[in-house]
Image 1 (cartoon, rainbow, N blue to C red):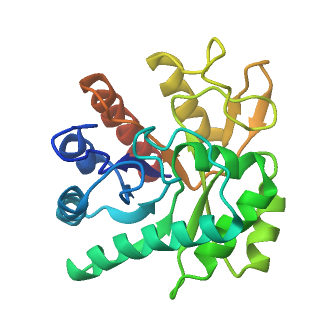
Image 2 (spheres, helix red, strand yellow):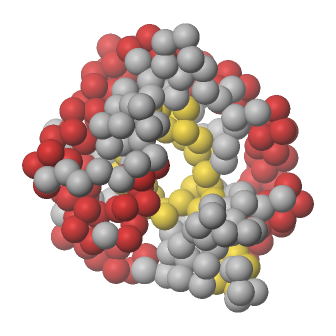
Image 3 (spheres, one colour):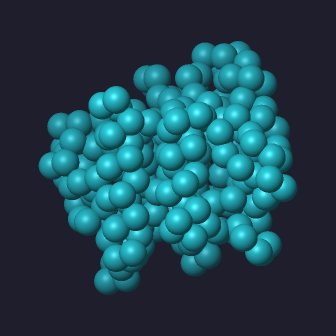
Length: 246
């Protein structure tokens, strides 16, 4: 199980996250591309940090919503969404190439990620955009009960998927994340570590209704915005390494 984290989300003198503390513990770095966060210097620094710690790099594009941190849904045409995605992916890819490395995958951010998971038209546009890049890139999607359907759709685009699960979020019975507006949507530290253990050992999570749901996850999303989050990531990485060694 690979750990991934959203990074490079500072902008100018405004700081978000504790990237230098997170990077040593993760495998995949989802780097903001400038439309919800990140700027050329931040992008360059994040790429260098990933190289230093051997983390693989992915593009983390969003709706063009810098003020709203990419958390607001936007009604874009197919061509607008496709072009904005390619613009962001190409920008990060170019910066990575100049640094002597390359990006390997794409994980949409925020509202775009959520919209993609519930709207098949948006998801198809995202898949088509990533598949049209000048070289193969993987697309990261939420692992849900619809994984087989998502694989089939991606295969029609010639696209390979990475499925992710979340360490700290509660799931509903369909495998979607429980809305943050609902109680219990974000796990306590104890429940988070139990969910990680369950995913590693059985490939299952316990939903909000108490149902055991099987998820085929390639990667686990973690968050490192504060010292408590960093401590949790260390514990999660220890569980992952322990499982890999067994």
